[in-house]
Amino acid sequence: MEKTFASALAPKASAKKKAAARAALVDLKESSRYLLTECFRQFGIDTVVTSAGSAERLRQEKFEACVISLGPGAEKVMEAARTSPSNSRLVLYGLGGSAREAMRYSQYGINAMFQEPLERPAALKLVRATHMLVLHEFRRYTRIPIMTEVNVVTQDGRRLAATSLEVSSGGMSVKSPEDLPAGTNVEISFSLLTLPRVNVRGAVTWRKGKSFGIHFAADDDRRQRIKEWIDAYLES
Image (cartoon, rainbow, N blue to C red; front, side):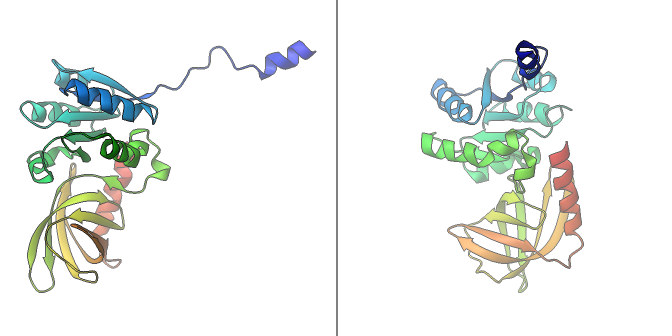
């Protein structure tokens, strides 16, 4: 009887262990590979080093994230990832360069940037902030980190350029050297991967350093397109 009871509680031998999320490290220096491997490992994410043939691997193999050094050959790999049925929604990290330089690749929807020289505290902070998206823990992740160009127009006609940091169905955080105080009413326009350019009204709600947050106007029906895109992004 005791043996039968113990057998009933024992895990089934045929049960399969859930596959770990994988991040491709594309054309990175050895020191960067080592540091990022340690950072991702802390959050249960395996890393796979790729170099020659990276574009083809990203077309054929499933990855949950990809870190790529911005430079010659980066665009080919990004295009391969974003046009692959299995990797089109992977979390894409750029390494090196400024946000302005990253805008050269904005059509591929870089989600976040590791700055060079790569330092452990900053790298770990970025992985911590985005790992739930990599692990598909979408119920706990309501904001999508993504970098794209954002055009901002104030009520008095002032125009400025910004770079998105995160977007949600209710608003967006952006980075810009221009100063816009909280309470400023604006209209912004931007595009997100498969979302064609959309315009939406909003207001600046907070400012910190060179970053500020914009809350979309509740009575602007155009924000529904953003919500639909986010829902599709999380469900795919």
